[in-house]
Length: 140
Length: 244
Image 1 (cartoon, each protein chain N blue to C red):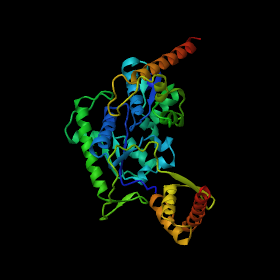
Image 2: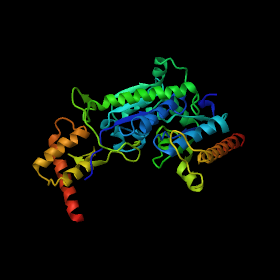
Image 3: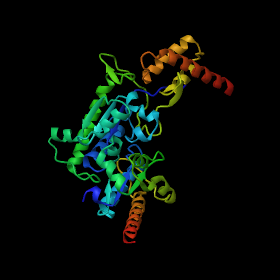
Image 4: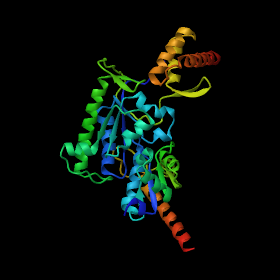
């Protein structure tokens, strides 16, 4: 199933120099590959930066959930600048503030027991909510 | 006294999330930044060229930059050229994989063995390019190298460098009725002031030449820039006196 066919798009930030960027990326993989593989798809932020028409069309026609690793919120901004709608944005730092015991560490490789799974579960719950809302409006 | 950022090479990875090769670019960039050339490299997140400010967009003009792409779409190279400056060098993972006869990288989340080998090969290529780029004289005005010029050195302590949140400082100046963002101007002012140079014709001339290193000053506009820089530096020095 291509990302275009899936109903919720996940757009993580490309944060490369800090731990929270890695959390953002890996949480997106955990949801799109493990937790909700059939109903989600990934969009690469670099394609939106380049203005790739397929990627822009995808975020314009599907609800997008963004995951940002810092306050600059590149993922959310790029979806909006591409004409898409951010159905829900997750800030990794906010999730960490609610789960102080789950301190993430590492950049190339994350530590075990950090915030990653909490972010992924929050993302999966958001996906479920969006899909339920979508089905509700279809059946109304 | 504040100093202008030292000589480093910029690395911009596509980080393409949907491809294993995108993960290879990210991990190879980190390997160079953290292990192979930690004191000589700096990176920035590609989206900051659009989502960030003028200081972020000055990145590839300020640092000779290596674009690191996973595939032939070359998002990092093309977007860097569109929004910041022409990369000094380019590396494409799929090309390196073919060149080295590696198997196809797979697993964007968890790389297979070929993907891990590609990380090492790619990082080595980038590190070699870093050495080559540091051997030349980067002209920040033209965004290219001057031939035969001696290399400069840096005495900064080695550390992994991320430019996120530490962009080149920019000050917007009114030049003949136009608002012009000038990269590094606050640092240049601090440097001149710290050297005890008071506003005047000679200092303004020096100021203009320094500004031209970091910014594109269009031909025929020297006079307008001179007027603007003299005014702004005078105001800067007055504000320093007022704070005492």
